[in-house]
Image (cartoon, rainbow, N blue to C red; front, side, top):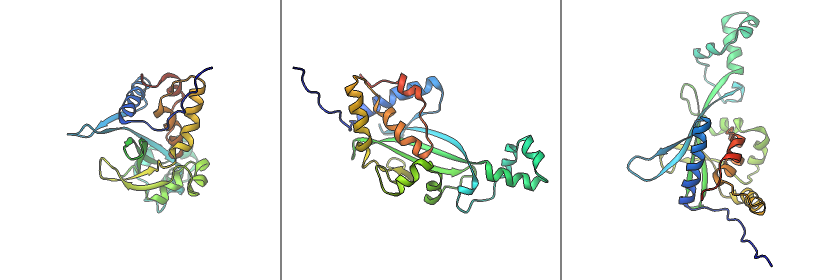
Length: 222
């Protein structure tokens, strides 16, 4: 009679977190999608980091500042042909082509023994987004679920390593979605990279997609 397997653990120690990140970053370097490791000077602590520029409709921003004149560069020839004057053209661009800068950090939480996703968002002129504006940019498929307080609530707090204001997806209910995924992988004798599996679930909530190649090319650490 075959011995029963122990259930897959939803938690990981810091060493495993680092090894998973290392494998993740190796693949990122291969496909050049912008992830890096940020080391805190004078310590052995660090985190994975990625910055994205994300186009949105400016109507989702609360009290949107005037669009920068740099936005004129994003007006296409077709748009220019359809507007009556330069002012109308800029207004059209502001509505359709507002661009936000999102900076994502993946940290290890010693309290929860799992990774945590921190992020901050701003306009291109450096104005940080409010919590209300960030909520407005959460993917519609997730917004209602998050507002009902499910597995990961969007909150604002200081970055544990930088001491700066960041948003985070609270990790208190990570087990609810990680346990089924890890149990399935174990049943199918698949060795999955925890960071890949976890980030593939939480990332899209805040417009951070993980290419499929991570799932097929990045394995669990030995």
